[in-house]
Image 1: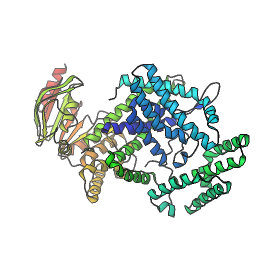
Image 2: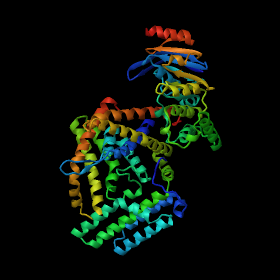
Image 3: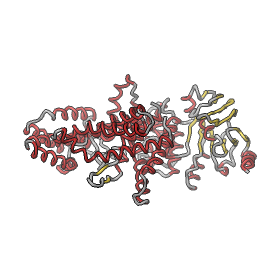
Image 4: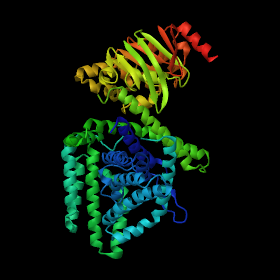
Amino acid sequence: MTTRDLVLIALFAALTAALALFPPIALPLTGVPITAQSMGPMLAGAILGMRRGGLSQVLFLLLVMVGLPLLSGGRGGFGVFPGVTGGFLISWPIAAVVIGLLWRRLGSGIVGQVLAVAVGGIGVVYLIGTPWMAVVLGWSIDAGFAAMLPFLPGDIIKALLTVAIARGVARAYPLR
Amino acid sequence: MIFDSYRSGDSVLHRMAPGPKLLSLCVLGTLLFFFDEIWLAATAFAAVSMLYPLAGFGPAVILAQLRPVFWVFVLIVAAQLLFGDAAFGVVLALRLAALVLLAALVTLTTRSSEIVDALIRTLAFLRPLGVNPARVGLTISLALRFLPVLARITGEVREAQHARGHGGNPVATAIPTTVRTLKMAHEIAEAIEARGFDD
Amino acid sequence: MIQLDNVSLTLQDRPVLRDISLTLSERRIAIIGANGSGKSSLARLFNGLVLPTEGRVRVDGWDTAADGRKVRRAVGFVFQNPDNQIVMPTVAEDLAFGLKPLRLDADEQARRIDGALARYGLESHRDHPAYLLSGGQKQLLALAGVLVMDPAWIVLDEPTTLLDLRNVRAVLDAIAALDQRVVLVTHALEHIRDFDRVIVLDEGRVLADDTPGPAIARYLAALA
């Protein structure tokens, strides 16, 4: 890890926090709110790669844990982890690692990149977050996944945005 | 630290070292999951609530911690009323409330900087694995330093989007903004090295 | 003394500096030249931020490539953008940052931090977030952050370019008052009239190396 790696890790932890400041947008038809913050792990994995991206999300969760109100709606502290969204939060470092790994493995084509972000940023996040949510709520796992369906279109939009941004950034300022 | 949820006080809980406090949170939090009888869960909830006056906090503080998860209680009880037994819903809700209160109590009575210091000290054990606590500490400080900067940049981006009547292309604003922050990161890394951090 | 022997520098396959030999020992040295002439890269060679592709840079006999630690203690560096050289969240924490590698005892560390805060009128901002300072105050904090390390040389890379006029004045006054030897990279020719030596760079080569009058005249002639 070079000094620059440390700075980038800190930068994307803070970026994930700053994304909470964008107001949620209601999707047409369903009215389900989509928040920008879950793009944090997507961007971190796609732009920084698996090691730095994953660590940036670990650092973000650490800052949340110590009580800084960095989550959407100004929440923070240990109390958020046993809650409904705890599993989604915990999944973010893993999501960033998976995205970073697949982004490299699947080549520089746009299809592979969309797949990388979708698998890590949606697949991994839902797989970890949904059962956690179901347990907290006392629901069946199936009911949990059914409840997540309305959020899927928003998350797909976020994955596509992430790929577009990461591709543009890579062209304008290639990171080693 | 710029902002955290700490509330100053001079209680036993405030004076307790952060390490043991975090450890008890982990242990008690895990134990709670074995409390699946309604009276056990209720006792746990009552016991945790009693800790608040001990820390010098009134009922208003307890309510403030529970308010964000209120709708979760509604969902829990509603689901059990529909599909299962209401008593189990109450157990789940009480358990969650106890856990949230306990976790929040740690955050309320411990400064962020104390928790960070405790974590960095703990990390010293990982030194043989190549973890350098000083570098972890630097990275945490840098993140805290970046928070207000990125909040300001976010504000600028929102203003720019607003000025264009929300019709702006989010990708077209995100790319130059990200590049700008990456350049900033590069310059800061250079400044850190110029000041001999790695020596 | 900073000594460059036949130094060339290539960055990303692009020659930036070509065969430069210099011996610097004056109290006030300025480096001027057009954008892309290699000024900033030359300055970065002095404290080992950039290592030469060919040739050797020595500071008081220490090779920047081999003795980076000693070189960085001897040569402090102030960058153009005051925002990007403040590392820690608050003013006092940032001053303490540079002192960490020196392993001073607590009293000496506090003495140096207090001294630097007082020197630049930052005492009342001690525990404030550094990002709330004005641009000029940030640049003074950056200078203070270098001064607490007590270097023999201070290299400043266009430290006033991003400041408004009043802050330019404050930073120039601070530079003039330094006891250290100073290397100032700048575009502002009016700031260096009383310097001991002015080095003019052009496309990676030394175009002129003289007292301010003739050196600036040569630079202006080359621009025309």
